Length: 451
Image 1 (cartoon, one colour):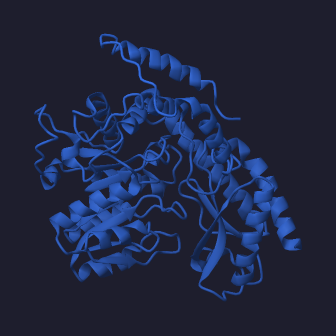
Image 2 (cartoon, rainbow, N blue to C red):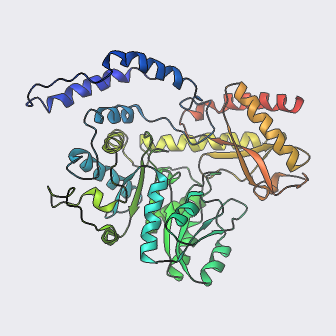
Image 3 (cartoon, rainbow, N blue to C red):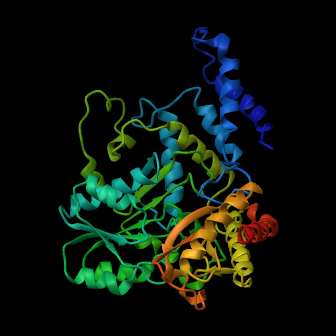
């Protein structure tokens, strides 16, 4: 089941890497505990069996996408050197690879010039973007939709910036009317536009947000941690495509390669359109920057030590699978969306379920139909458990009932939120597994209704 053939590729790559250090004097060292390594690794492998099968198509719950084998191998390869991309002294080759990889991400959204770097994940990447916004508009409010990731509120608190949540429309997107009503009052430093919400994959109407940002002289940050790579997909709806086509007009953007970019955790990325924001990071360190006049990545990052292995893995993946439309990588994203549309249509055509709006990316939310929202919520948890016993792993989410209002058909709205099922079909293999997933889901639903 697990890929083991690629281990030989790692051995071959290690031989190649070793050639680059052949001139060094002979040195061998037996690491502490070497005699028990096999025993400990065997115990670790046994412990790791206590996991959901995140790598398998029957896992369709949280946002967990297996790294590409080339990313795993490249990351492991770099560990024999363990570069630190804070300064060129600690990661000379991997720093150059990071710049190349980030430049390709920037080109994907239409930026020939940019300032950016990798981070340990989307949280740190968004923190840097909002930190810059706070430096440029001190003490002004950060606003984001009610369905934006909760980290924005937390980050604003860390940065001592006020934060306000803006109501959503019935499709889980920020309400443009509510946003303008807030901007009219003034005091806003930045608007966060979510390009692929965590719960439903909804894409905020970026066109209108950018127009409002320009009208009210407010910075726009695009949190595309989940959805950013879908800029390459050729099968988006017209409305969603229009939002992605304006992505390059945001002031900053966050994309997580460890989501749809086929990378190991943790690998996020923050990119700024205006190179001049680099001045905000300026600092002096007598022990870090002394071997080069070039820009060190550590001079444009709030993080200090950063894994150079992440850059090596991302660079290698993008060399193998370039970020171009109609390419192999893009087709994988399109397959994910096709899988989500397939599952959505099956659900919508079955009277046993209620659905929310059509998926914009590759996330589907739904619930069993029942007499009331409370009853449907209880039933959803039973279906979740029954599906898991059959090997199908979904997720549970708590969403506003208005997201499902168009399909509730007389269900008693006795509570404002519905506990629903959420399926993230982010593996290209999901396209071929939707039929099997549907069969298991149908069986689980029958069992849940009987129990």
